[in-house]
Structures are given as C-alpha cells and as structure tokens.
Image 1 (tube, rainbow, N blue to C red):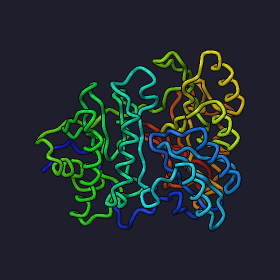
Image 2 (image 1 turned 90 degrees about the vertical axis):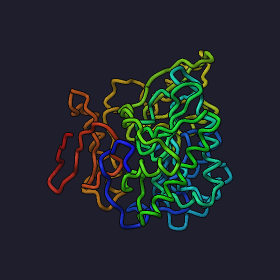
Image 3 (image 1 turned 60 degrees about the vertical axis):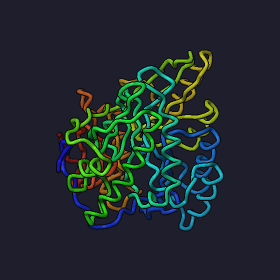
Image 4 (image 1 turned 90 degrees about the horizontal axis):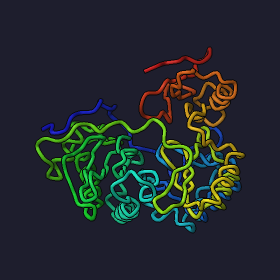
Length: 393
C-alpha cells in the first residue's frame, strides 16, 4: 500500500529518542541544556519574565530560540532541573511533567491578527496541546515529533511536521502527514480531534513495525500507513510546497488596526534583558521557527518607540540585513564535538560583510552532524581541523 507520494527516506533509528526537555536536560560542555516547549510560540509577558529570571539565576543569562519556536536555557548547574521545573510550572509553562517533551507545535505567524489565513489557528493550538497532554498514550511520542497548524497562508505546513492541519478554506481543513497531504478532510471544529487521532496512529504503526522511529518519515511508507489507519483514501495529494526560507520581518498591519513588529534575533540568542524588554512592550509575544519574535497589538503611537528600543538591543527589522542569511549550531564552548566557535566566526563574517553577495542562506556548524540546520536551500559552512569547508546544495 502506498497511497501517498514518498518524500526522501530518513535514516532508521536504533535507539530511543533522548531529546532534552525542561526536566530531562542534556549534559553539554558548558553545563546542562534544557528545552522549554512553547506550543504555537506564544508566551505571555509574565512567562517571559519567568524565563528571563531563570536564565539569569540558573543559566548563562540567555535564551536560545529554536527552529520549532521553542526556547533553550544553557549553562545549567547539575541538579537545576527541579528548581527550573518549579518555576516553569508556576508560570503555566509545564502543564504536564509526563508530556513536556512532546509539546512541539508550530502555528502560523500572527494567525487571526493579520490577513492571509482562512481562520485563526490559536484555538487549535490550545485544543491540540490540551488533548496531547491529557492523553497518557501520547506521552510516548518522541521528543522530535512535530505538529504544524497552518491557517492557509502556507508558512508552517511545508516544514514537514509529522502531523499537521492546513486550512484550505474557512470551512475545510486538510490533514497533513510527514509533509504530504493525507487526503483526509475535516471541518475546523473537528480538525484537532483528527490530528490527535493521527498522532495515536503514528504510535500504533511504529509499534507494528517494531521501530524506534523519531519521525513519521522514518517509518516504512509511514504517511500512507498512518493515513490508512485513519480510513484515508486510496490516492492522495502531492508533497506540500516548501515553507519560506525566512519569515516576515518589519511591521505588519493587523485586522483590528493595530500593528505587529516582527524582528529577527541574530543567531537566535535572546538575552534575559531583551526578554524583559519584550515583556514590557507587549502582553504576549510569538516565537517563530525562523528564530524571530513577533510583538503584536501595538497602538500606532507606540510602534516607532518599540522598534527603536528593540533595535538598540540588536533585534533586526530590516529584511535586507545579512543576519537573515546566517544560522549556526551552538559550537564551542557549549558543544564538546565542535571544532570551532562558530557563533563568533559567523558574527565576524556578518560584521565584516564577508557573506556572499547573492544572499544565499548559510548554516555554520562545528562538526559533520550539522545540528540546527534549517530546511530549504542552505549553504553549509562546516568546521574542520584546518578551517571551514563550504558545501552548496
């Protein structure tokens, strides 16, 4: 059975996923690394303040934005997980200790606030997260399992979520599986239930194949077999169009007449002071998979002042900035595998304008593992014992 068009095959996994969370940290060279899941990327001002304080008190003073709209704290001392967990739980960032690693949910940027989508996916985010956290079975999902909730503008559907919802019209939603249209349709009110059923079907198919797969695409004929478990059609659609390489940057007019600011955080490294500033400027913000941050609901008189304050701290609002071209892994000193301080080297390349003039996106990495590599066309700048090697797609 192969009702869905195949995507490139992924490697088989021989070990269980050990993706870090807020309570199960990773021992890095610079201390513990904790990953805090932020479904839909939305954080309230109070949650931002909590994270900023945790970064100062427990970590290295910074928050790292990930390609899934989540946050990481680095430099944690041994045993810091308990104190961090208490802080996160009090702020509403840890609703389920058993499910905290599996709450990877991307949502369309500014859905419901700006034109471009068929509907507002924010209720989907809340419903999917509640359903996920409330089902003991779904605690068994791998920490890399990803859900994408797209309002129809196509910004996150193409990021190859394992399970996804894509609004095709105000009253029609498509289920996506592993970056492919599964051919199944639902009304908006029933869409979350269908996505949760697909997550359960992934676990059932993984067990049937005796697999330790971290992602749906790693299962043999995974999308087709999961779709079949849900009563999917014999034939289904093609792979989804690729997501944009970079997200929107600058100012966006909202449907209610207010304005949102969208700024890139260079190399995804947000200081505790920047987080506190964001908390002062807005009641809530949205993190994006392009390591940028959205400050919504600004009155006309407040937009310029907010943009100036954020720009002074290093947040970028210019879509022509070279900072939009560059991403990196952690590099030295945080990663023991890394052969270079890639963040420092990439920063030097930006500040000295040494990047290619064609605007090609680069991902600088300290070893062949190429951690944090974004999707889409990317030039890899790989550290070696004798310097950097450049590899183009």
